[in-house]
Length: 215
Image 1: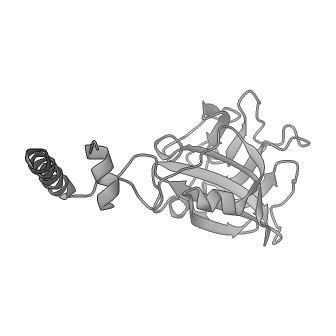
Image 2: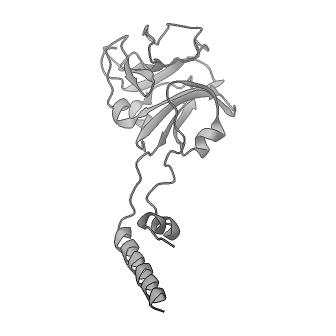
């Protein structure tokens, strides 16, 4: 029997990874996705609030973010996300777009400024007045109001009412809809100090094979 280093990682239970490593990812906006599929796919909720919530610090949305972020919406108590899309944290957290301009990443057009934040289809145009009001019959658009306390073209400081989830609009004051930010890791996280132990274990297995052959 051949014993490889990869097999030894698995056998010892020290394989690199994290409990929040994503096993399920999504390209482009997705509708009607089971919440259980997302959570069982390695995603964890780091922010959850009503669409009517106001003055939420933007920094609070991304506290504890891993490699990837997911923005999602659903009706309160629903077991299905109405709409979601994912993007790299290193892209979205520092993102600052000009009004009515989006940046394509992972199959969606993303935007974030002092007017609103969210996504649309990869080839869609947006109209931030101040949330995206284009394509109100389309289900692939998510738009949450933001607030900068000054010039709306500046970077967003606070999350304000959430205006839309797809073709569900005018949700700024709604207590029946909620918005969520989830995160996941996509890069294996090595276990500190594990490699010498694993190499030692591999050496022991090799020595055992040699003794068996000699016998």
